Picture: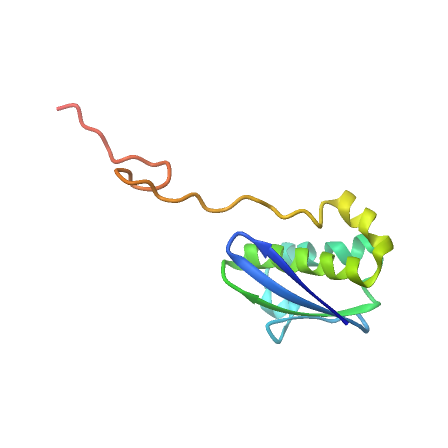
Length: 126
């Protein structure tokens, strides 16, 4: 059993990888229940498919913060890191696929004197 952490935007996922049949639980719920959108489900499962280990391990993830897309990315990174800890030979495959790299894109802060991060207040000439 291995325990790793994955992060994306504001989401943080703690992922436990246990030898099993390929079941994925997120916050105590099945993957299909927690992530209703199909593309998020496939996004989370990509590291397992790339390494052909989808039927070898069970994954239990605890996710907090952010939205669904950020949480899916966090689970994906945590799962990838757990696979590397479980089997070091998978590291090159996961590194090539970009599964181990933390996505640095985060929300830009709101600036003073503006409506948002980039949007300005409307300017009137007269």
